[in-house]
Amino acid sequence: MGLFDKLLGKDKKEAEAKAAQEAEAAKVAAEEAAKKAAAQAAAKRTAELEELRAEEEAAANAKAIAEEEAKKAAKAAKEAEIAKYTLEVDGSWGPLTTITTQHIFGLEEDGSCGPLTTKAIQEKVGAVADGDWGPNTTKAMQAFLGVTVDGSRGPETVSAWQRWCNEQLKL
Image (cartoon, rainbow, N blue to C red):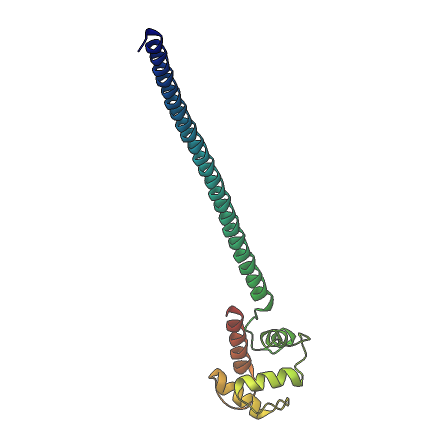
């Protein structure tokens, strides 16, 4: 082999070695770039997940606050209703006793103890539900309320009914 061929072979080997080094450097650079891109993608996903978690937490907090406010409003409404219909236990059957009774039974609140109101009371106390108030209705009411059964709708019976009505408002 001549000198020229040796030089040419040496140059070729050097060129191949240099090409191999450059290929290795390119490979390392590509791997580093891929790692950097993967790290950036992971960081972006982490940030997105943290943002979603924060949004979910904020939504959950807002929902909890809204539910608590709704409970408070419902409680206030119930307390207002109780206050509106609560009877003074005075043994006197007046329009408010009738209105409260009608409210409890879901009837029109007109303050008149007519056949519909009477029938609802009769059904509740176990009397014949004919809409006509008579001594048997009063006796059934007295038995239901646990007071003296004498057929007279006097102060003892009315007071017991007013107490019963007030208890129903709290349920």
